Image 1 (cartoon, rainbow, N blue to C red):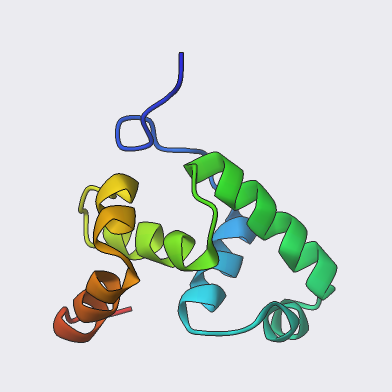
Image 2: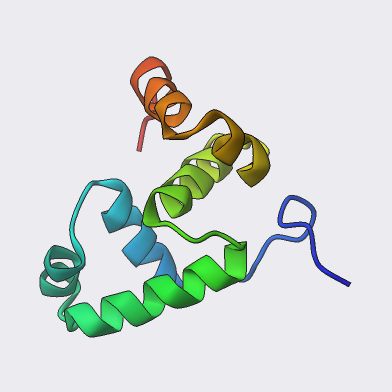
Length: 99
């Protein structure tokens, strides 16, 4: 049976969370690696595992998932893909996020 990511929260490691946080600040894999003292390849491996855990295919979807969870909102990948990234960009620009 396939898990619904909205009902079952995947187990994100501390390191994966650090990578997601840096990704959400717009850092590249190389920049994240430099900041966390790991190689860009290791960052990419972590991002691959994160994408598999939360059922997404793009880094921007990881960021959307992260922001939704910070705000205590339901992450709906189907809606994100249906309306496209433009609605996500609007969301980012309209909603205040205190980190």
